[in-house]
Amino acid sequence: MAVIKFINNKVSLKKALNYICKEEKTDKKLISGKDCIPENAYEEMMTVKKMYQKLTGREKIHFVQSFSPTDKLTYEQAHEIGLRMAEYFKGFQVVVATHIDKQHIHNHIVLNTVNFETGLKFHQSKNDLQKIKDLSNKICKEYGLTVTEQKSKVSDIKINEYQARIKGISWKQVLSNDIDAVMEKSNNKYEFFRNMNELGYKVNWSKERLSIIYTTPTGYKCSDKKLHKEKYLKENMEQYFKEKSRKNIKGIKNEKITYKSIHSNIAQIIEQFSKNKQTGDISTLTGLNESAKKQLVIEMHYSTEELEDMEL
Image 1 (cartoon, one colour):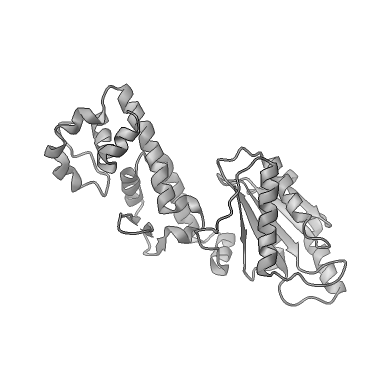
Image 2 (cartoon, rainbow, N blue to C red):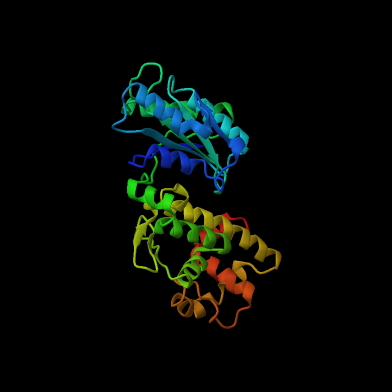
């Protein structure tokens, strides 16, 4: 699946090109130009603007093409797809940079707004945007990748946030990075609560709310939809930890401890556990070994029917 997101901001053409070509984000072989040389792209694009006296207004069009981590895709293949996307913009100079610094591969595509053949400026209509997304889906299908026809459930990156990320001062980026790290080391959402709490975050993740609300150590509040990636949405986070818990259940089964083995005495300790379950603190539970404690977390997280569906 490839998702297209247009970055609508007033960041200058020069800063945008410098950002997408940063050494720590990509590799020289994954930076290419259409109708321009990447190293001289800014000067060449400005020459076209000067030639047609189009030095005012929007300087560039910038969009990101992000691929699903579940797709089997090499960096080189992602770059090929980006270059094919660039060919769509006839008469426009384009720089394509494939970023490899995140878990998901993504292309940054920046084009000059002035056409070097006609001198006309590029104008985006809703129809144009849809054509670009349709082209992305068409190319992805040719590479055997999954595609999506649905509108993204997360919000687009706004100008202030984008500028903050470029400068490395985005608190949302710090929050996203911390969530990634904590997800990796947490086996279930209660451990996730506890580990986020240890970093100073508050996490409001309840059945009553459609979204997860985070409060940072400095007091900023942010919903999962404002983190700009669908992986952080409540339903996707729940699925992520459900899969992790499923693996834990299988591991506990191998230790010959199943949820049924502690089901008979769970009522006696459920009150004790319920006081601590929001923080994931199971250290105070008595009468259970560590494996059984882990199993209890799973027992509290899923209904009996869901556990039975997991084919213990």
